[in-house]
Amino acid sequence: MADAWELRDWPRSLDNGGMQRPRPRQHVLRYAVLLAVLAGCAAPSAGGSSESAAGAAASPNPVTAAGRTAPAGAASSSAMSSTATTPAPAPTVTPGSPGAVPGGLTIAFGGDIHFEGRVGRLLDGDDGLSELRATLGAADLAVVNLETAITDRGVPQPKIYHFRTTPKALTTLASAGVDVVSMANNHSVDFGPDGLVDTLAARDASPVPVVGIGRNAADAFAPAVVTVRGLRVAVIASTQINDYTVNTFPATATAPGVAGNLRNDRLLQAVKAARATSDVLVVFLHWGTDYTTCPDRAQVATATAMAAAGADVVVGSHAHRIQGSGWLGSTFVGYGLGNFVWLNTRGEADTRSGVLTVTVDEAAVRARAALPPNQWSTQKSVVVAQDYAPMRVSDDGIPRRPADADVLTAAWEQARSCARLRSHP
Image (cartoon, rainbow, N blue to C red; front, side, top):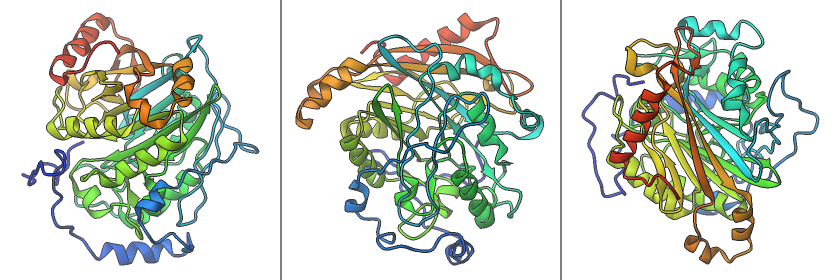
């Protein structure tokens, strides 16, 4: 969702692979305030104060989900990270796989989610999003973007739109079959330092892994490592929306905030590190230009960089529109997932939604793992198929299959033309 900062004429530079050059950071006093607030939540530990390439290259130390069970109806159970300022252990979960394709590992993606206005009523019961289990939750692994702060405190930041919810949102998503949640976006710190403290506390108690936000950069860029069918799937999240949030609350070596990639350096470190320790690598990005159906230059540059670094799947959201998806070399790219669980305020185009599901060839993944890493780039894509289930966001905020599904499918196919992606691997 655009805010006042997003609408300014930001200086754009292509000397960093198409990334926008951030404006000089404002609100510098917030770091001292925020660190003081967090001092009681997490004591610094050795090695947690350096955002070095060596630290980024450290492999995640997964923990099991023993002793933690998801709520009734959830598709998975998980163990969340600790509250230390060093990178939290990456959680390992084993999702269920209702409707999974035999011989193929399926990963489903939904776009932006919040619980504002009447959409907040979905949190009143225990199964407000239960009908999504048949689509989003039917895959072996499901990933979405939760675009909101999780707090009842804090001061609204100088933005146009402010989203907040309660920790119940994470439980509701788990019950809908969601397995990994990204919070790397431009609304996760809408209520300032106090809201960020609460959001991180909710993350720590979440029944599903939350990525893209953390107590420092190493924590925010750490992947969720999910074991599915014996394969280690790593999910990393970051935002490249050059707005108030990423400029005021970026996760750094010593400060909490969101994982941001106005420059791709830190994200590339995380991707390369995860590539070395995972079987399948997913990068979930918050990117693009609002209300456009074609990717912008920054999206294309970043997708190309992620592909070169070894990502198997690169998907994203933010533009409130469905953008093209297909293959970029051996990497599958989905540029825009659109709104998903959302309060519709702008008309028909905002209601266009859907679930994007990719199928990964397990045999191809295992065959690739047996090769030296320098030969991986010569292999075909391990993502062998994509499927798009078109939906429209209803008045209650839930996306459902519409009567004009064929029209939405045709629009999704058409969006690939300006994305310049192949329809097949």
